[in-house]
Length: 102
Image (cartoon, rainbow, N blue to C red):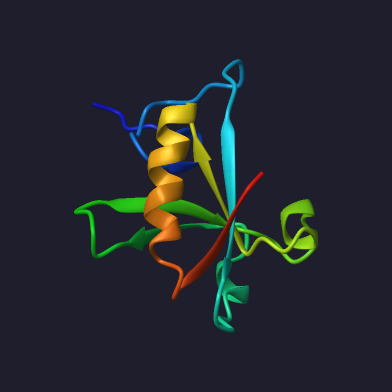
């Protein structure tokens, strides 16, 4: 089985997201100064204490629109349901992330 690359999958459910689908983005900023320069433009996987899975996040490049809007990373979801579940999880991690809907 071939697995879709993380940039084409929902960060919550893992479903493939094609370019025809409506997507729901979440922008997040590290609440503490974290140097992610070497990871800009790359997918990292975030681990959380409340769930047993890794969540893919795209680290914003320094010249991106996301970074200009204050987002250190972007997370993609395939539906409003997945968006709400992921946002709720991220909101509980307020010691690590400051989360905004985009």
